[in-house]
Image 1 (cartoon, chains in turn yellow, cyan):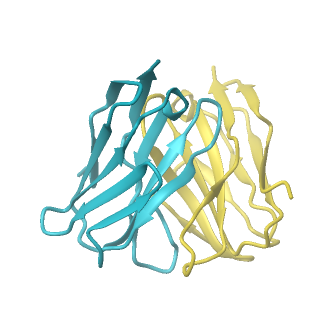
Image 2: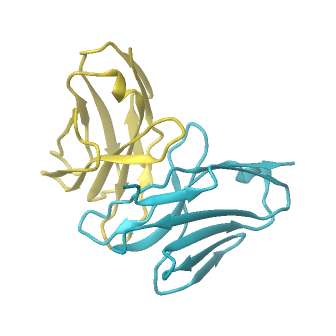
Image 3: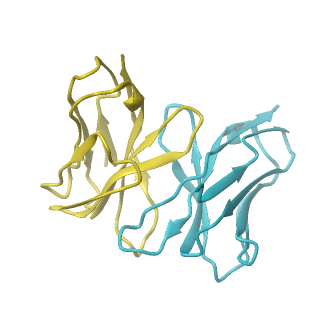
Length: 113
Length: 113
């Protein structure tokens, strides 16, 4: 049982490049989330999904896109990378509203230079 | 407007001492009050949580105290150990369909041997 798996662990992008951060969970959780964590700060919600085919914006969605075609996968897309997107990105999942605990992946450290 | 204010930002405690971290919030719609623990290079993990119908919850060395009228809740770590050295986040949840958490800025705890 792997839990929440994020790939890659590290990535350096040039300004204007695009990339997709992958997130997969094997716990059959309905809810999935993307957070970013800037140095010395708390986590901010980018996007979330309450089930396959359903996504919604969080607190800081600008510059990002998501899709949820399956229960297991929730990729995060950066279309035109900017230095302000340098951060650590965490994917998380949750069984649903009744059980509130979130299970987090180990994160992707992204630098945009 | 910062919805969740956490204090202190950093804390140094001797082994065996008591660590106290506080969280103040503005949003009265929060209905679930967890503390997450994060070790370097890892995602946050749920440590302990409380619902607003109780004023205190204890799990081993960890206790949450909740003051609904003051809109504050705190984490107490008794008999602090070097292995408790981590960053702690309060992350209250708004009662809605998305089960979304609002993270505080974090408290970096160091327990000296």
